[in-house]
Length: 327
Ligand SMILES: NC(=O)c1ccc[n+]([C@@H]2O[C@H](COP(=O)([O-])OP(=O)(O)OC[C@H]3O[C@@H](n4cnc5c(N)ncnc54)[C@H](OP(=O)(O)O)[C@@H]3O)[C@@H](O)[C@H]2O)c1
Image (cartoon, rainbow, N blue to C red; front, side, top):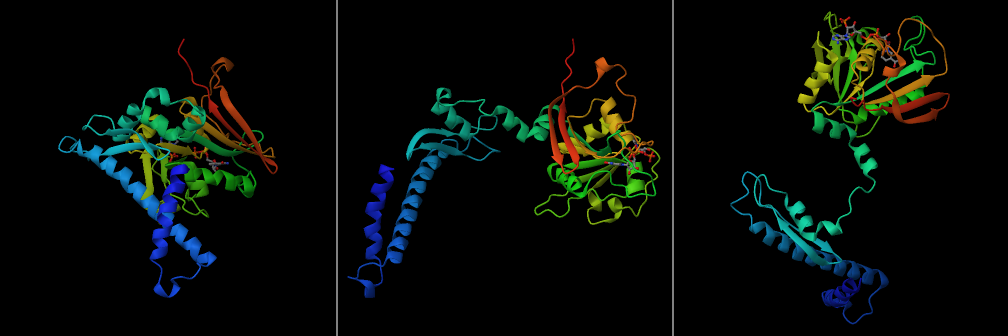
């Protein structure tokens, strides 16, 4: 703060001498004075930044000729307008300049683990993918209280409210791909796109089929995003996910139907669930998580970090399957 003020006092008079001649000798107007001060502060900031950047450039020079195919990079750590550490990139395979710089500052000065859980949670998709090569899998569906995905064919298909569906829709903005079974494609003809949101990045669409019986006029094959639809024929879900990981897709949202969700459950492929429960009982054949099931309760997938959110008359349940440790 002291340094800042000193710089300001030096610069401000310099700027005043540069005013147009017709204003010479006049007392500066309040607005004019403000402009002058801002100009002085900007100049000071520019000079300070250049000073630090020159120091970083000097550091970078040390790596010239040794870093290819990486660039020569230097870094300085500035605290309270003082350079407290310097570092440079020593060559391919060595640490980045910023890491060198922080090491020079000294691990005593660095505290880690602060809000670690929140940090991990923020990049949960990337974290899993970078460690395993497989995408982070979110299983999502809207279901009745008796665990069914559909209403009778003659009725509107929605089980949850429009507000709950909008909430669910937002999930698509966070994943790299949305995956469904062919029956969902044939019955619902979904778009699986992000709509009504600014800056929404469109996910890849993935369809599983054994029969290959897919309607060519379906949105997934005919809309503007058609090039971003992948079809996997007669592949195990685990192999499909493996392949998506190889394509650098770090997160996949499984949006049903029941057969595909059941396979994900049986294969213990789910990393997170996001279920929307609508206040109705439908009965009927399409069970939300069909499949073999876990057999005995002892083998059931336990859930952790369970949260319940009320959305009008609907409930959104988010949870993470507990890791299974070999005995
Ligand atoms: N409420 C909700 O949130 C929600 C969400 C999605 C869907 N739904 C409803 O759920 C119903 C569909 O569910 P569903 O359980 O009947 O079917 P589904 O899971 O959508 O699709 C099953 C089909 O997917 C293909 N398939 C599944 N696993 C495969 C694999 N490993 N490899 C290759 N192909 C595979 C097969 O297609 P082929 O037959 O082509 O061989 C299979 O018949 C629809 O009525 C839909 O409206 C509701």
